[in-house]
Each structure stands twice: as C-alpha cells, then as structure tokens.
Length: 315
Length: 315
View (tube, one colour):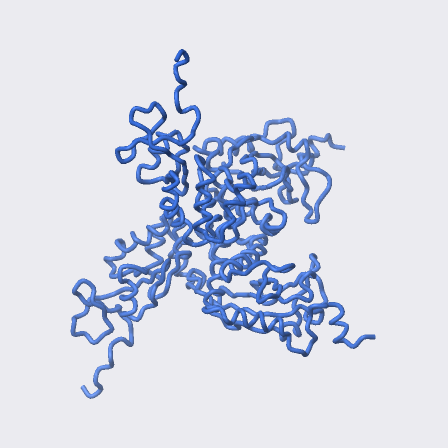
C-alpha cells in the first residue's frame, strides 16, 4: 500500500503534497493580493451580484436569503452571477478546464450564501476561489483552497457534490476573512421603519419616507430603485429634495459640491449612484458646532450630540 | 369505472371538462388580449430577459442557446427572469398557489427556449401561460393551456416534470403564435461580419466596425454594450460618429431630430436606446432621389437601389 501522501499524489496529479507548501496556490493568492483595491473590488462584485438577482426595481425584494420570495433557481444562479462579475472586474481569462486562469493556473469559482461550499467532482485536484457573504451581517469572505479528497466530507448530494470538510476549511488560504460588504439598507432597517417606508402605494411617498427614516447613512441606487419600483426611480430622489425641504432634510448626492458639504458635516460621503440625507438646522456664524456654509448661511446637523463642545464647568 | 371525463374532473377539481369550453382560461386570455400593445410588451419582456441573462457587457455573449458559453443554471434562470419581467410589465399580482393572478385566476408562468415545455406536478389542474422564443428566428409564442393528465406525456424527468403532449399542444389557446422578437443583431450577422466586428482589442474600434458593417438596421443598446464590453459603451457610439464621418457614415439616435432624418431617408426609426447607421452622399437639391436636408445640404443613401425613379425608357 502506498503511504497516504503518495496515494493523494497519485489520485490528484496536479496536487501538491499535504503538509507541503502549495506553490501554485500561493502564486494565485499573490496575484489577487497584488490587485490594488482587491477588497473593494470583491465587495462591489458581490454587492452587485446580489442586487442584480434580487432585481429590486421589478420585484421590491431586498433579502436574498428569503425562503419564499427568492426561488432556488435564483439562489443557484447567484453563484453564476458572482462568477461572471468577478471575471469581468478582475479581467480574468477562462481556464483550460476551470472558470478562470489566474497567474497561469486554473481556478474554479465557488460561491455560497451559507457557511460551506459544495464542490463538484470535476474540481478535484484544482484550486478553488471560495467566496461567501452574509448580507445581513454586511460581511464577506474570500479564500483559496486546493481540492483534495481529504478536504471534502464523505456524503454526496444528488448532483454528486461534496462539502468542504473541517480539514478542508482549515486548509483555506484566506485572501479576506472579514471583508466589509456595502450595507443592504433595507435589510438592516428596523421592521417599523421598513414597514413605514413600504406603506404607501406612491413611489414618491415611499422615497420621501426612505430619506426621512434613513439619515446620515449611505443610500445606494439599488435601494432607491427597490423602494421606488419604477423606471424613474432616480428622478424620485430629485423630487424628494423638494418634498423634504420643509422638514429641514437635505439629500446629498455625488455632484454640485455635495460631497464637500457631507465632509464638512462629518457625514458619509456619497459616491456616484448613492445619496445621504440629514436633518439640518440653521446656526449662527459664531456657533462652535460642526457647521457648513451654504448660500451665505450656516447649517448644523439637527440634534446630533457631541458636536457642541461641553460648556465650561465652573459656570 | 368512471368515464374518462369524470375521472379527469375528479383528479383535477379545478379543471373544466375536456371538450367543454374552459371559461376561466378564456377569461385569462381575454384579460391579456385587452392589454394595449400586448404583443410589443411580451416581445420586449423576452428580449430584455435574454439580454440580461447573456449579460453581454460583461461576457461578450450574444447566443443564449450556446452550449459551452451559457451554463445550464443560466438557461434555467432565464425562465425565472422572464417570469419576473412579465409580472412587472403587466403588473400581475401573485396567485394563491401559482406565479400570477390574472382575471381572478391562478396562472403559472412556463418558459422554454426549445420547442416544448416541461410542467411540474404542482401545476396539475392549473392554467399555464406558455412562453417560448427562438432568438435566431426572431420569433416568439405565447399561449394558455389548462394542465390535465391527458395534456402531458407519460415520461417524467429527474424532477418529476412532464412535457406537454400532442393533445396538450393542440389544446393551447394561442395569444400570439407568430410574435416578432426584436432582432438580435449579432446573432443574425454573417460570420465574416461578426468576426470583423470582434477582431480588435479596442472597444472603440469594435463599435466603429459594428456601425460600418450593420447599416440601415436598428442596433440596440444591448448590442452596443456587448460589442463595447465596458461601462462607457454608449459613449463609444458618440465617438464613433466622429470616427466614421470621413467614410460618409452617419449614426442616428432618438434625439436631436435624428428620427426625422431616419424617416425622410426611409430608414428604421431609432427609439430611445437604439441607433441606425447609414452611408450617405450629398446630392443636388434638384435630385429626385429620396433625400433629406441637413444644414442646408441634401443627402441620400449611397448606393441604394430603387430610390431613383427609372429613367424614361425612350431616351
């Protein structure tokens, strides 16, 4: 009988031996780590894939793990969408047998919205790019693993796929273990606020309510389209400015000096396709509160604590 | 033993008896037929679903039936995407058990890119909205059928689904049997033209080649994005005008009086998100050719036959 190491080497010719450093896998890891903004790119790919499958503008959905609203075909397809978007974002060519060619090596893309990955038979011996996310926790993970027999559990599902074993999971070379996924605003909203947002039959009223309830936080294009559920979703944001002005609420976008105003008020700064709203109040030029000059007047965030320096303690 | 008709009625309580008019199904048919532009709406839903799954901007793909380029998960998902887009376009609420509620009746959406539909067990007794298309032929079909045992073939696939039998197909109440699907330009292009379009590594060069090779035909946004394969795909069209001017080629869009020019020259008229190119030549104001005045000069389509009235035959 062959020693276990040699047996593994025989069954998976391309595999480095267990216990040895897997140079091919480390070359793939290095390739990804050398991509500037790798974390932001993966984050944006996963966010985009989830949002596209939810298709909020048409469906009003915002929870990819929803049992009734999201069909199993859609959950399966999400993995394909992630694979496509990552390929395009990182400009990866197709591999000889696997999804990608990275640093000269075949790499298979494997996605899960759960906690483990299921690996098809044909990935045996190959390097897998493992990707997963929790939209509720706004977190994602990216790792690399070489698929060997001892990295997989014994049980197979109907399609002959096996899940990664404890040993397989401990063998993962992590690229990002605690990645920050852009927030899914509607998913993270307290139920009462979300119900208030979705209460009206009017898209404009829903958008108004959204920017009333979600203040000082980035609101994405995708959130706006999901709430508005119409082709003119973005115009509803522009109109919301007029509707909310009387309530002291401003909605800052990425143009017309808005990012500067956001920065001056210590708000998150909106990039293209995102907004941030805040309730402001006029303050005197001499106010020591964090303030911004707009049209010759000065404004601070209404009711924000900590902006005003404590009054001297002896008076 | 029960007569066959009664047996069917027992097994599918909701079913009208064979040979009788199915009033529920006819009410659903009437509801759809009363939608203005029903044909255009279904055509645009199917076109949109195919284009979104192809995701040409990221993948460069244009053939949804391609065996290697389009994964089986994507082919399955296409049915879900059609279902979602049709629901949104026709503003259909969800049924009690099936996908849609139409005219007070549950209706299940069933899509196929092939020639037959596979029907799951749970659709038994229900009305199905049958949808199919051939992107290569630019045709689609929409029909309604009540699922009964005798409308299905005996054999089941792995998921327990059965295909529609000859009797089932003859029972279809057609809403559209010969619908015109907006053309998939890249799919319909002769191989040599398509290869010429995709030859260059430069997105701008590919777009230039597209509008040189595809003249006097509508080119959609989706075709442009598939050829350009970049975020700025639409800007490449604007720049192509400059590049192609020297060759006498104009690219007409939906704004700035372009549709009027298209109409004057008897070209297809571009709507929003589409273009039409043509090679023009200056002609004298007195020319009897079909011509259009632009900036005080007159232009006709270069080399088009049939525009010039036949010369008098005796001279």
